[in-house]
Length: 565
Image (cartoon, rainbow, N blue to C red; front, side, top):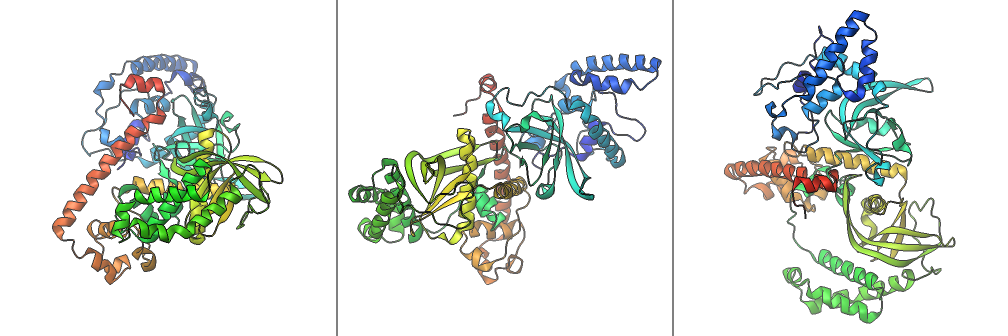
């Protein structure tokens, strides 16, 4: 549906699977050794014939007129599929392949396909020493990860202490189509739903991991990023633990929720504290002037809730003291004993008794990370000094104006920001800072490997759900208490009634669901279904164009003559 998978019948045609005819000899120049090995097992006379055929196939493959191919662009909206001619070369089928027109694709020969893939998994070992062109030659950051396209996948067993475990073996081709290798998904990674044609990143926990040709991805080492070209918001990933459907809707629909006093006042306090951090000025006069200026720029939503600027300032005056207290305790050149850290599970490798924010490097730093498939806006990037070891760290600073009622999602968001910051500045960030202004509580949030693994798996699940959102959304959680206060409940209930043909009973929300959807008639439902599908197709085109920003080199973008500003 989204162009990420190679249709089984088309893959059958490409592989030319047949029970009666084995795969043709490999016809790629850079796997010539493998072809020689295969031919070497034949009698001498047949070897000469095979060598002649091999040379002829190489000549034919190089002279293929690509304009004769009639591929449907809609089958590859994201550009993640392997072009047929490149897949043909990688699999060793140097022959002209015609794609059947219409929908009458040939019936797949499952037994022959499995046999061919089995052969490919076995023979790929001889291709694993092909020159690696994606290990940092173009960019130093490539030493931390590699990008691949999945050619084939299968389940198999492996032994651990005399017991057999299950793993998923992936046959991969490098982004330059010059490297064939394998990866093995084990333990928590086994359940990720990957398919042929999907793009993935393998991020190495060991900086020397890129020097290998086969990788194990398990609970102890390495990460797999599925569909890395979809940059998922860190906030959406953190919220997906509570409701995956809400996170998908946030990526596709604009939230139209009623403004409230806590929401508006929290935003004013948030901006005021950020301004004081940036100016490093926490005097009473500076805080008052900043708050008054921000209130004047927020008059529209204030008038909606029936407040003028004078009333709002009077209500927010008590927060001036807490902001000033934060600045006097934590924003200093050196830590003081009062600058303590609140504990939940506590920092692991950065034990300290107190800290100080010595410098503010950036405010509202917006970072895209194609390595992890994430994006986010960090409230502040700060330089901290810890006591008593005087260790200096550059950390993400996440500011929350409410209480620590959603500490789990806030922690998850802060941990993901450590990945963004590490990618942005190319060094390891192992801890983040989470501050609650209402209680003046500051937490150090360690980015442990187990939590990063869980968050990346959640990110992969959200990305896969986004891939399917044109045809189906994740199910409703059917929790009346959570749903009635959800900011996406209008979009959620509308979709459930018009697209999923839902009712009060299937939604689990009873009469509340009817009260919010009774105005939708059949004509409106048809209109909504039509346009939501068209918008989904348009989003796919935008994603296809956006990913070229980081996948294409500067020279390639210049030659393409496409402006991206």
